Amino acid sequence: MKIRKLAKTKVAAAPYEVWNAFIGLLANERYDDLAPEQRPAHLVFRYESEVQNGGHLQYFENRRGDHLDETIAALGILGATEQQEILRQAAVLWRRQLRPRIQTVEDFCDAALDGEYSDLDSRFYACSSSIHDYLQSHLDRHQSNYVLVE
Image (cartoon, rainbow, N blue to C red; front, side):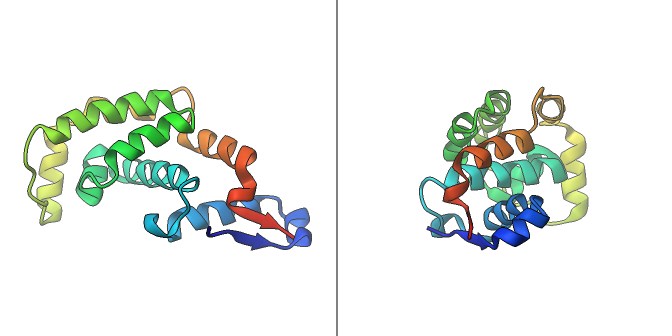
């Protein structure tokens, strides 16, 4: 299991370092290198990062559906049921057709302007609780799986 280690003195002076270490682990480790209990947070973090940066179109374009069903399940594990339902609906759209990779920025812009995921993106951004909230709650309950303070 990959775990980040922090000194007690560092955490006492800057408690946010626990969060930073947690996010660093989720962002920088590969899925296959994480323990099964760490993977849901990793998948949820990746999903949120992509959607915040370019909507569901970017999520699917960059992830190509890798670990899609696991990500849907992971959202439920973390309690993000609104986002889970949104991704479930987005997955139905994604799976309807074979999708070649978008090759250029212009093609990405054209696809985004088509608005296939626009309603789902808007619903995602309007969720009553953010993915950040669910990740923080998960970290609060399972810190020892991610960050050791010595």
